[in-house]
Length: 358
Image (cartoon, rainbow, N blue to C red; front, side):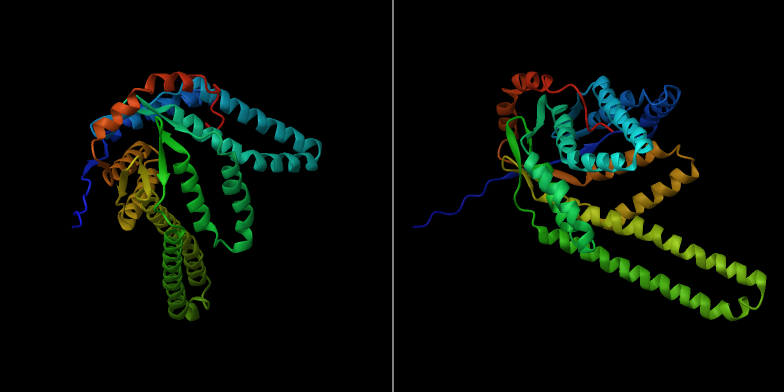
Protein backbone atom coordinates (compact mmCIF):
# COMPACT_ATOMS: atom_id res chain seq x y z
CA UNK A 1 0.00 0.00 0.00
CA UNK A 2 1.43 3.36 -1.05
CA UNK A 3 2.33 5.73 1.72
CA UNK A 4 0.84 9.24 1.53
CA UNK A 5 3.28 11.92 0.48
CA UNK A 6 4.54 14.06 3.32
CA UNK A 7 4.73 17.78 2.94
CA UNK A 8 7.16 19.96 4.81
CA UNK A 9 5.52 22.95 6.42
CA UNK A 10 6.87 26.42 5.77
CA UNK A 11 6.76 29.45 8.02
CA UNK A 12 6.58 32.91 6.43
CA UNK A 13 8.87 35.63 7.78
CA UNK A 14 8.13 38.99 6.14
CA UNK A 15 10.94 41.49 5.70
CA UNK A 16 10.39 44.86 7.34
CA UNK A 17 12.00 48.27 7.08
CA UNK A 18 11.57 50.44 10.19
CA UNK A 19 13.50 53.58 9.22
CA UNK A 20 11.93 56.99 8.73
CA UNK A 21 12.62 59.85 6.36
CA UNK A 22 13.25 62.29 9.22
CA UNK A 23 15.79 59.99 10.91
CA UNK A 24 17.68 59.42 7.70
CA UNK A 25 17.51 63.13 6.81
CA UNK A 26 19.63 63.96 9.87
CA UNK A 27 22.26 61.47 8.71
CA UNK A 28 22.01 62.50 5.07
CA UNK A 29 22.35 66.27 5.59
CA UNK A 30 25.45 65.82 7.76
CA UNK A 31 26.92 63.47 5.14
CA UNK A 32 26.33 65.99 2.36
CA UNK A 33 27.76 68.97 4.25
CA UNK A 34 30.87 67.16 5.51
CA UNK A 35 31.52 65.63 2.09
CA UNK A 36 31.46 69.12 0.58
CA UNK A 37 33.74 70.77 3.15
CA UNK A 38 36.25 67.87 3.01
CA UNK A 39 36.30 67.86 -0.81
CA UNK A 40 34.84 64.36 -0.96
CA UNK A 41 37.06 62.66 1.63
CA UNK A 42 34.18 62.22 4.08
CA UNK A 43 32.16 60.38 1.40
CA UNK A 44 33.65 57.09 2.63
CA UNK A 45 32.32 57.73 6.15
CA UNK A 46 29.03 58.89 4.62
CA UNK A 47 28.66 55.60 2.76
CA UNK A 48 29.26 53.54 5.91
CA UNK A 49 26.80 55.61 7.96
CA UNK A 50 24.16 55.27 5.24
CA UNK A 51 24.61 51.53 4.81
CA UNK A 52 24.57 50.92 8.54
CA UNK A 53 21.33 52.87 8.87
CA UNK A 54 19.56 50.92 6.12
CA UNK A 55 20.98 47.56 7.26
CA UNK A 56 20.08 48.22 10.90
CA UNK A 57 16.51 49.12 10.00
CA UNK A 58 15.94 46.07 7.77
CA UNK A 59 14.56 43.11 9.73
CA UNK A 60 13.53 39.53 9.03
CA UNK A 61 12.54 36.86 11.55
CA UNK A 62 12.96 39.39 14.35
CA UNK A 63 16.60 40.23 13.61
CA UNK A 64 18.29 43.10 11.82
CA UNK A 65 21.15 43.09 9.33
CA UNK A 66 24.52 44.60 10.16
CA UNK A 67 27.20 46.32 8.08
CA UNK A 68 30.78 46.02 9.34
CA UNK A 69 32.94 47.85 6.81
CA UNK A 70 35.30 50.56 8.02
CA UNK A 71 35.40 53.91 6.22
CA UNK A 72 39.15 53.73 5.70
CA UNK A 73 38.68 50.58 3.60
CA UNK A 74 36.33 52.43 1.26
CA UNK A 75 38.58 55.50 1.23
CA UNK A 76 41.52 53.39 0.05
CA UNK A 77 39.45 51.99 -2.80
CA UNK A 78 38.29 55.43 -3.85
CA UNK A 79 41.85 56.74 -3.69
CA UNK A 80 42.86 53.99 -6.13
CA UNK A 81 39.98 54.90 -8.45
CA UNK A 82 40.85 58.60 -8.27
CA UNK A 83 44.52 57.83 -8.93
CA UNK A 84 43.55 55.78 -11.96
CA UNK A 85 41.41 58.66 -13.25
CA UNK A 86 44.33 61.10 -12.89
CA UNK A 87 46.61 58.71 -14.79
CA UNK A 88 44.01 58.41 -17.53
CA UNK A 89 43.63 62.19 -17.89
CA UNK A 90 47.40 62.75 -17.98
CA UNK A 91 47.92 59.96 -20.50
CA UNK A 92 45.26 61.47 -22.76
CA UNK A 93 47.35 64.63 -22.90
CA UNK A 94 50.47 62.69 -23.88
CA UNK A 95 49.03 60.51 -26.62
CA UNK A 96 45.46 59.46 -27.52
CA UNK A 97 46.53 55.85 -28.02
CA UNK A 98 47.58 55.55 -24.39
CA UNK A 99 44.12 56.59 -23.18
CA UNK A 100 42.52 54.10 -25.58
CA UNK A 101 44.73 51.31 -24.22
CA UNK A 102 43.81 52.28 -20.65
CA UNK A 103 40.09 52.19 -21.51
CA UNK A 104 40.52 48.69 -22.93
CA UNK A 105 42.46 47.61 -19.83
CA UNK A 106 39.73 48.99 -17.56
CA UNK A 107 37.06 47.17 -19.55
CA UNK A 108 39.00 43.92 -19.28
CA UNK A 109 39.53 44.20 -15.50
CA UNK A 110 35.90 45.22 -14.84
CA UNK A 111 34.84 41.61 -14.05
CA UNK A 112 37.63 41.40 -11.47
CA UNK A 113 36.44 44.67 -9.90
CA UNK A 114 32.87 43.34 -9.76
CA UNK A 115 33.98 40.17 -7.98
CA UNK A 116 36.00 42.18 -5.45
CA UNK A 117 33.06 44.53 -4.85
CA UNK A 118 30.68 41.59 -4.22
CA UNK A 119 33.25 39.97 -1.97
CA UNK A 120 33.77 43.14 0.06
CA UNK A 121 30.06 43.82 0.52
CA UNK A 122 29.24 40.22 1.43
CA UNK A 123 32.02 39.76 3.96
CA UNK A 124 31.11 43.03 5.65
CA UNK A 125 27.43 42.09 5.97
CA UNK A 126 25.84 39.81 8.55
CA UNK A 127 22.54 38.64 9.99
CA UNK A 128 22.24 37.27 13.52
CA UNK A 129 26.01 37.33 13.80
CA UNK A 130 26.43 35.14 10.71
CA UNK A 131 28.55 36.69 7.98
CA UNK A 132 27.72 36.55 4.31
CA UNK A 133 30.41 35.53 1.85
CA UNK A 134 31.05 35.49 -1.89
CA UNK A 135 32.93 32.99 -4.02
CA UNK A 136 36.20 34.66 -4.94
CA UNK A 137 36.89 31.86 -7.45
CA UNK A 138 34.02 33.04 -9.65
CA UNK A 139 36.32 35.01 -11.96
CA UNK A 140 35.67 32.87 -15.06
CA UNK A 141 31.92 33.28 -14.63
CA UNK A 142 32.41 37.03 -14.12
CA UNK A 143 34.38 37.38 -17.36
CA UNK A 144 31.68 35.55 -19.32
CA UNK A 145 28.88 37.59 -17.75
CA UNK A 146 30.38 41.07 -17.61
CA UNK A 147 32.85 41.01 -20.51
CA UNK A 148 31.74 38.63 -23.28
CA UNK A 149 27.98 39.24 -23.07
CA UNK A 150 28.30 43.08 -23.05
CA UNK A 151 30.57 42.84 -26.10
CA UNK A 152 27.74 41.12 -27.98
CA UNK A 153 25.00 43.53 -26.87
CA UNK A 154 25.53 46.16 -29.63
CA UNK A 155 25.27 43.47 -32.32
CA UNK A 156 21.91 42.15 -31.08
CA UNK A 157 19.99 45.46 -31.05
CA UNK A 158 19.44 45.06 -27.32
CA UNK A 159 17.85 41.62 -27.50
CA UNK A 160 20.57 40.16 -25.28
CA UNK A 161 19.56 42.48 -22.42
CA UNK A 162 17.26 39.85 -20.82
CA UNK A 163 20.00 37.24 -21.06
CA UNK A 164 22.48 39.69 -19.54
CA UNK A 165 20.02 40.35 -16.67
CA UNK A 166 19.62 36.62 -16.14
CA UNK A 167 23.38 36.03 -16.09
CA UNK A 168 23.93 38.96 -13.73
CA UNK A 169 21.36 37.77 -11.19
CA UNK A 170 22.58 34.17 -11.44
CA UNK A 171 26.17 35.30 -10.90
CA UNK A 172 25.29 37.38 -7.82
CA UNK A 173 23.03 34.79 -6.19
CA UNK A 174 24.75 31.47 -6.94
CA UNK A 175 28.15 32.74 -5.76
CA UNK A 176 26.82 34.07 -2.44
CA UNK A 177 26.36 32.28 0.83
CA UNK A 178 25.30 32.90 4.42
CA UNK A 179 27.86 31.34 6.69
CA UNK A 180 28.65 28.03 5.02
CA UNK A 181 25.24 27.71 3.35
CA UNK A 182 25.25 28.71 -0.34
CA UNK A 183 22.37 30.44 -2.06
CA UNK A 184 20.87 28.57 -5.01
CA UNK A 185 19.54 30.10 -8.20
CA UNK A 186 17.71 27.08 -9.53
CA UNK A 187 14.13 27.80 -10.52
CA UNK A 188 14.54 31.09 -12.43
CA UNK A 189 14.51 30.66 -16.21
CA UNK A 190 15.81 33.02 -18.87
CA UNK A 191 12.44 32.88 -20.65
CA UNK A 192 10.84 34.84 -17.80
CA UNK A 193 13.35 37.66 -18.36
CA UNK A 194 12.49 37.77 -22.05
CA UNK A 195 8.77 37.91 -21.22
CA UNK A 196 9.44 40.90 -18.97
CA UNK A 197 11.56 42.53 -21.67
CA UNK A 198 8.99 42.14 -24.44
CA UNK A 199 6.19 43.27 -22.14
CA UNK A 200 8.07 46.53 -21.60
CA UNK A 201 8.87 46.78 -25.35
CA UNK A 202 5.16 46.46 -26.07
CA UNK A 203 4.43 49.14 -23.48
CA UNK A 204 7.00 51.42 -25.12
CA UNK A 205 5.38 50.86 -28.51
CA UNK A 206 1.97 51.74 -27.09
CA UNK A 207 3.32 54.92 -25.50
CA UNK A 208 5.06 55.90 -28.76
CA UNK A 209 1.81 55.40 -30.67
CA UNK A 210 -0.11 57.49 -28.15
CA UNK A 211 2.38 60.35 -28.24
CA UNK A 212 2.67 60.08 -32.01
CA UNK A 213 -1.08 60.44 -32.22
CA UNK A 214 -0.97 63.50 -29.97
CA UNK A 215 1.69 65.10 -32.18
CA UNK A 216 -0.32 64.35 -35.30
CA UNK A 217 -3.45 65.81 -33.66
CA UNK A 218 -1.60 69.00 -32.70
CA UNK A 219 -0.28 69.39 -36.23
CA UNK A 220 -3.70 68.73 -37.73
CA UNK A 221 -5.51 71.20 -35.48
CA UNK A 222 -2.97 73.99 -35.13
CA UNK A 223 -0.40 73.77 -37.91
CA UNK A 224 -2.33 75.43 -40.78
CA UNK A 225 -3.15 78.60 -38.86
CA UNK A 226 -0.10 78.57 -36.71
CA UNK A 227 2.37 78.49 -39.55
CA UNK A 228 0.67 81.54 -41.03
CA UNK A 229 1.43 83.62 -37.95
CA UNK A 230 4.95 83.87 -36.55
CA UNK A 231 4.10 84.01 -32.86
CA UNK A 232 1.65 81.13 -32.97
CA UNK A 233 4.10 79.14 -35.08
CA UNK A 234 6.76 79.59 -32.44
CA UNK A 235 4.35 78.48 -29.73
CA UNK A 236 3.39 75.32 -31.58
CA UNK A 237 7.03 74.62 -32.38
CA UNK A 238 7.91 74.94 -28.72
CA UNK A 239 5.09 72.57 -27.80
CA UNK A 240 6.23 70.00 -30.32
CA UNK A 241 9.83 70.23 -29.12
CA UNK A 242 8.70 69.36 -25.59
CA UNK A 243 6.81 66.25 -26.63
CA UNK A 244 9.92 64.10 -27.38
CA UNK A 245 11.42 65.09 -24.02
CA UNK A 246 8.18 64.21 -22.28
CA UNK A 247 8.10 60.92 -24.17
CA UNK A 248 11.63 60.05 -23.04
CA UNK A 249 10.75 60.88 -19.45
CA UNK A 250 7.67 58.66 -19.55
CA UNK A 251 9.62 55.80 -21.11
CA UNK A 252 12.38 56.07 -18.52
CA UNK A 253 9.97 56.30 -15.58
CA UNK A 254 7.77 53.43 -16.78
CA UNK A 255 9.72 50.95 -18.92
CA UNK A 256 12.94 50.79 -16.90
CA UNK A 257 11.33 50.47 -13.43
CA UNK A 258 8.77 48.04 -14.85
CA UNK A 259 11.45 45.77 -16.28
CA UNK A 260 13.44 45.91 -13.05
CA UNK A 261 10.37 45.03 -10.97
CA UNK A 262 9.51 42.01 -13.11
CA UNK A 263 13.08 40.67 -13.23
CA UNK A 264 13.57 41.25 -9.49
CA UNK A 265 10.46 39.19 -8.74
CA UNK A 266 11.59 36.38 -11.03
CA UNK A 267 15.11 36.38 -9.58
CA UNK A 268 14.21 36.46 -5.89
CA UNK A 269 11.40 33.96 -6.34
CA UNK A 270 13.94 31.63 -7.95
CA UNK A 271 16.41 31.98 -5.06
CA UNK A 272 16.76 29.46 -2.24
CA UNK A 273 18.93 29.17 0.87
CA UNK A 274 19.28 25.66 2.22
CA UNK A 275 15.68 24.78 1.36
CA UNK A 276 14.32 28.16 2.48
CA UNK A 277 12.76 30.21 -0.32
CA UNK A 278 11.83 33.83 -1.00
CA UNK A 279 8.68 35.44 -2.33
CA UNK A 280 8.88 38.89 -3.95
CA UNK A 281 5.51 40.45 -4.82
CA UNK A 282 6.42 43.85 -6.25
CA UNK A 283 3.86 45.44 -8.57
CA UNK A 284 4.84 47.44 -11.63
CA UNK A 285 2.52 50.42 -11.38
CA UNK A 286 2.97 51.12 -7.65
CA UNK A 287 6.75 51.15 -8.21
CA UNK A 288 6.35 53.41 -11.25
CA UNK A 289 4.28 55.79 -9.13
CA UNK A 290 6.86 55.74 -6.32
CA UNK A 291 9.77 56.51 -8.65
CA UNK A 292 7.87 59.17 -10.61
CA UNK A 293 6.55 60.95 -7.52
CA UNK A 294 9.97 60.67 -5.86
CA UNK A 295 11.57 62.35 -8.88
CA UNK A 296 9.05 65.20 -8.81
CA UNK A 297 9.47 65.72 -5.06
CA UNK A 298 13.27 65.69 -5.26
CA UNK A 299 13.28 68.20 -8.11
CA UNK A 300 10.88 70.65 -6.47
CA UNK A 301 12.58 70.35 -3.06
CA UNK A 302 16.02 70.98 -4.63
CA UNK A 303 17.13 67.57 -3.41
CA UNK A 304 16.06 67.96 0.23
CA UNK A 305 13.47 65.18 -0.05
CA UNK A 306 16.07 62.66 -1.24
CA UNK A 307 16.20 60.91 2.18
CA UNK A 308 12.41 60.57 2.24
CA UNK A 309 12.48 59.12 -1.29
CA UNK A 310 15.15 56.54 -0.44
CA UNK A 311 13.34 55.44 2.72
CA UNK A 312 10.10 55.18 0.77
CA UNK A 313 11.68 52.84 -1.78
CA UNK A 314 13.41 50.74 0.91
CA UNK A 315 10.16 50.32 2.83
CA UNK A 316 8.21 49.24 -0.26
CA UNK A 317 10.86 46.71 -1.32
CA UNK A 318 11.04 45.20 2.19
CA UNK A 319 7.27 45.09 2.65
CA UNK A 320 6.92 42.98 -0.51
CA UNK A 321 9.54 40.35 0.31
CA UNK A 322 8.93 37.23 2.44
CA UNK A 323 11.28 34.48 3.60
CA UNK A 324 9.54 31.10 3.64
CA UNK A 325 11.43 28.93 6.11
CA UNK A 326 11.17 25.21 5.53
CA UNK A 327 11.22 23.33 8.78
CA UNK A 328 12.93 24.86 11.80
CA UNK A 329 14.67 28.16 11.05
CA UNK A 330 16.17 28.20 14.56
CA UNK A 331 18.07 24.97 13.87
CA UNK A 332 19.50 26.42 10.67
CA UNK A 333 20.64 29.58 12.50
CA UNK A 334 22.15 27.58 15.35
CA UNK A 335 24.10 25.36 12.95
CA UNK A 336 25.54 28.33 11.08
CA UNK A 337 26.25 30.33 14.25
CA UNK A 338 28.70 27.66 15.43
CA UNK A 339 31.03 28.73 12.65
CA UNK A 340 30.38 32.47 12.87
CA UNK A 341 33.48 33.26 14.97
CA UNK A 342 35.98 31.52 12.72
CA UNK A 343 34.32 32.92 9.65
CA UNK A 344 34.53 36.44 11.07
CA UNK A 345 38.27 36.04 11.62
CA UNK A 346 38.69 34.84 8.04
CA UNK A 347 36.77 37.86 6.79
CA UNK A 348 39.02 40.17 8.80
CA UNK A 349 42.01 38.82 6.88
CA UNK A 350 40.44 39.80 3.57
CA UNK A 351 42.25 42.48 1.53
CA UNK A 352 41.62 45.69 3.46
CA UNK A 353 40.46 47.69 0.46
CA UNK A 354 37.01 48.19 -1.03
CA UNK A 355 38.02 48.22 -4.71
CA UNK A 356 34.41 48.47 -5.78
CA UNK A 357 33.41 51.03 -3.16
CA UNK A 358 32.39 53.86 -5.46
